[in-house]
Length: 135
Image 1 (spheres, rainbow, N blue to C red):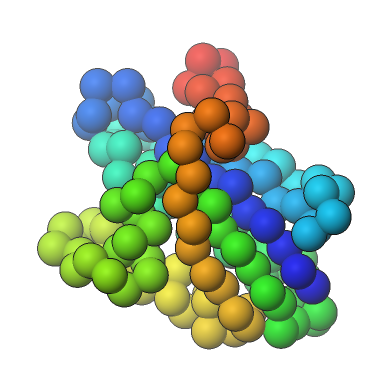
Image 2: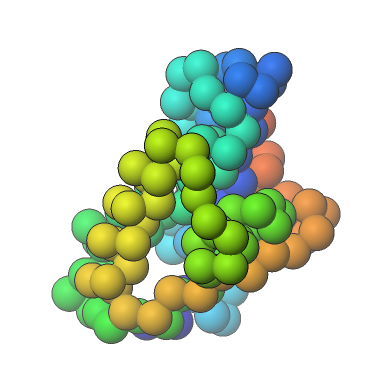
């Protein structure tokens, strides 16, 4: 399957109350799943990483039988995209743990690439993360 996954994380206070949101779509724009959940008291980077992790975990649990996939993960966080693409190192141990979970999922799913976009092009994932924080 060719999938596009928009992800976003939010933290009010950084660290503070945190959440993530993601939308999984086919390459033709059909929404397969969307989710927004709180994750307690965390940093924005943990929230951003968790969004990627949980979206890939969902794809693994729901669509592994259709692998290998071509997945494009889209985020408005250049830092996360550069770290997950291997361009930047990760020094934070909490992020490294989530990073490792993401890489395990990647290896079972097929080709996963990461792309950054301006915040306004990631509004649905952003909205899901903020709705989760507001509820």
